[in-house]
Amino acid sequence: MQKKYLVVFSFIFFSIAPTANGENSDIISNFKHLPSQQLLDTANYYFKKNSTDTALVLYSLLINTIPKNSDIEHQKIIADAYNQSAAIYYNKRDFRAAYELLTKMLLLCEKHNYVEIKPKIYTNIGNIYFRFQKYDLAKSYYLKALDLCQDVAGIILILNNIGANETQNKKIDSAFHYLHKSLQISEQHNDFRILYSTWYNFALLYKEKKLYDSAYYYYQLSLNEAKKNNKIEKEAENLSQLGELFFEINKIDSALFYINLSNAIARENNFLNVLATNYFTLSKIERSKGNKTRALELFEKYADLKDSISDIEKFSDISQLQHLYEIAKTNEQIEQLVVKQKIRDLIMFTILGALFLVSIVLLYIFAQKRKLNTAYKVLVEKNLEIIEFQENSSEKYPEKYKKSALTQNMQDELLDRILPIMEDMSIICDVEFSVDKLAELVHSNQKYVSQVINNVLKRNFRSFLNTYRIREAQRLFSEPDAAKYTIDSIALRLGYKSPSTFRDAFKEITGVSPNFYLKSIQNG
Image (cartoon, rainbow, N blue to C red; front, side, top):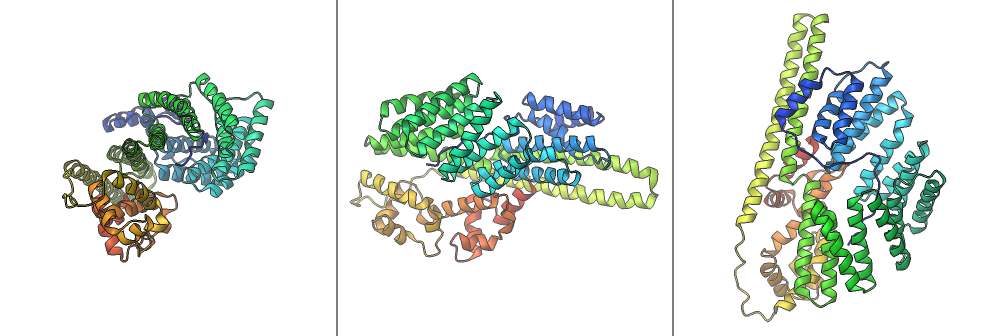
C-alpha cells in the first residue's frame, strides 16, 4: 500500500459546485463589461465562496482578452487568472488542463519577465509531477521555485514539499534536511500556517525509519494543528495513519480505535482516499486475525474505491465528463464573445471583403466546436451503456467446477496470490504471459487458477488480463507527456501481439476506441 505524503499546494483548492449552462450565459452578459481588475476581484470572490464554476467563467473572460504589450498590469491580471484556473482544474483532477494553463502562464511570465510569479508556477508544476510519481522532475521544479522565491511563506511551503517528495522517493536523509530547514524558518519568522503539514511529513519520515514512538509523537502534533486550523481532511488522514502505525506494531485495538475515528470523519465529508486507505488497513487487520473472507470483502471495497478515484482522474467518470462538456460549451460562448468583439473592431478598419473572410473563419471555428461537443456526447453515451451493461450482467459463471477438490478457503488463498501478480505490469505485460504462466508464478496449476478467476471474479482469464492491461493504458494516456505515445507503441508495451487485438480489448473494456479516448482527453 503506497503511503500518502502531504504536499501543500501554492494555490487554494475547493470542491466543485456545478453551474447550469444557462446561468453561465447570464454570468457572461452581467460581467463582460467590467474593467479587468474588477473582473479579477469578482472572480476571486466567487472562488473564495466555493462557486468555482462561476469563478472559472470569469477567469476565462480575462484569459481570452487581448491586452496591449505595454499594459503590464493587465498582463499580470491575466497571469493571475491562469493560476487560479489551474487551481480549479487541479481540484477537479483534470491534471492535463491544469498543466496546460500553468505552462501558458509560464510563457507569459517569461515573455514579460514577471520573476515574482514564477515560483508559484514552478511549485504547482512540481505538484503535478509529484502527483504522477515523477519525483525527480517534481524536485527539479521545486528547486527552481526555491531559487527564485523571496516570500518567507512560499519558501516554507516549497521546502516542505521537497521534504515530502524526498521521503516518497526513499531519500530519507535529504527529506530530513529539507523538513528540518522548513521548520527552522517557520520558527525564525513565527509563521506556522502549514505546521500541520510539516509535522505530518516528519511523522511519515520516522515511520519509514520504523521509529514508531517518534512517528506517533509527530502524528499527534499534526493532528492537534489540523484541528486548530479546521483542516478536517488532514485530521482524518492523521487518524488513518495512526491506525496503520498501531497495526504495524501489532496493537490491533488501538489501530481499530483510530481507524473508526478516521472513517467517521471521512464518511461524513466524502473523503474517498482516506476511506480507501482505511479499508486497506482493515483488510490487513482481518487477515492477521485469520478472517480471510472478511479480509477479502474489505479489500474489494478498497479496490472499488481506488478504481472510482482513478476513474475520476482519467476522465472515465460520467459526471466528470458531463461537467467538462458543460465547461467546453461555456468556453465556446466566451470565445464567440471575443470573436464578436474582434469583428466590431475590424468593421472600423477593414473593408467588406475582409469581413467576409473573417466570417468564414468563424464558421469553421464554430463547426469544430460543435464537432468536439458531439464527441463528448458520444463518449458520455458510451460510458452510460457500459455502466448499464455492468449493472445488468450479474449472472454467475457456469458452475462447471462442482467436482473440483478446490475448497472455498483454498480459492481465497489462491486469489490472494493471484491479485499481487496482476498488479505487476512488468509481469503481465509480457507478450508470453498466459494462464499457465500465472499458475506457475502462484505455485498452482492452470485448472485451479482458471477456477478461481471464473468462480470468484466471474470472468474468464482473457477478460481478467485485459482489465489490468487496459487500466495501465488509461494511466499512460493520462500522463502530462502522453503525446509521446502512439497507439501501436502502447499496444506492444502492454504485451499485445498486434495493435488490432489491443484496440478490440480497449473498446470492449471502455466502450470506445483508444484513438477516440486519447483524442477526448487531449481536447478536454
